[in-house]
Image (cartoon, rainbow, N blue to C red; front, side, top):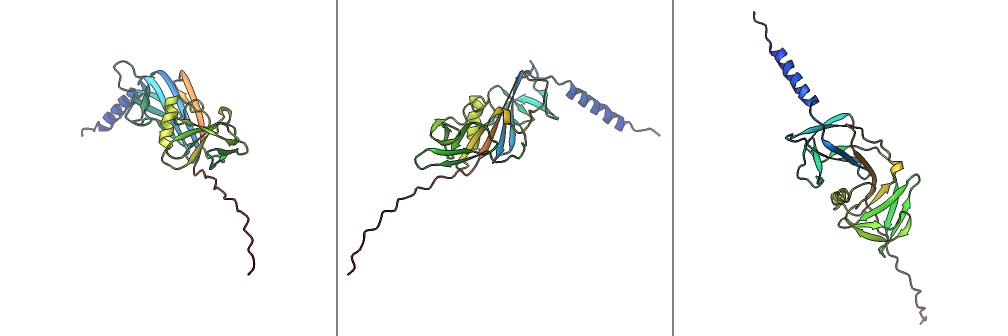
Amino acid sequence: MTRSHLPLLGAALLGVSLLSACTMSAPGNLRVHEALLYGGTQERIVWVYGTLGQGSAQSSVKLGANTAELRAQISDDLGLPGTLSVNGKATYRSATSVTAQKLSVTRRTDGTFNVTPLPGAALSAVYFTDGQTWTKLNGTSGTVSGTRSDGLGSAGQLTSEEGAALGRALLGQGPLAVGVLDSAAIPDAPLGVEPAPTEYRRTALYVLPNVPTQTAVTPTLPGRPTTPP
């Protein structure tokens, strides 16, 4: 009886596949920028910058415990110049930790804002959107005014392009505020990256949805006394 060699052939093909994956080259000039969102949105968004080798259509990098395939960037609102697609997506995504609320914001009828950092929060900046445009508040505590902003600008260690892209992604969701957390108080640990990038940036943002507007109070005028008939 002739013994089948199909299982051995399958194993051989698997070995070739694994060898190919292991020998996939790393990208050149690897840089990694991550935005960690907390509060109303709990997500880690990672941009991978770099170049593919000459004549190479793909590369790989290890992000956390996962090996990701890098290719030319796709058409996407978060697909920024100089970045590579990660597993067919514009960015690499994973969940962030659940945290306590970091701030309270109220919009006043005169166009200013009441900002209150909550216990344990360290804020470096606060932004507000009414769902259509962005404003950077001129302070992180008390009653403050604001200045028009292109999205989240260069919040934390974000580039202006990253801040603008995140700002566009958060529009259309009603009034919300975004607090930029101090870099020394980011709840999650840095994402492990192999090979080591030449540049690594991380920015933590607390998203506060449903920001209320202070209701105007109409002063009550004293009534005019009436003369009894």
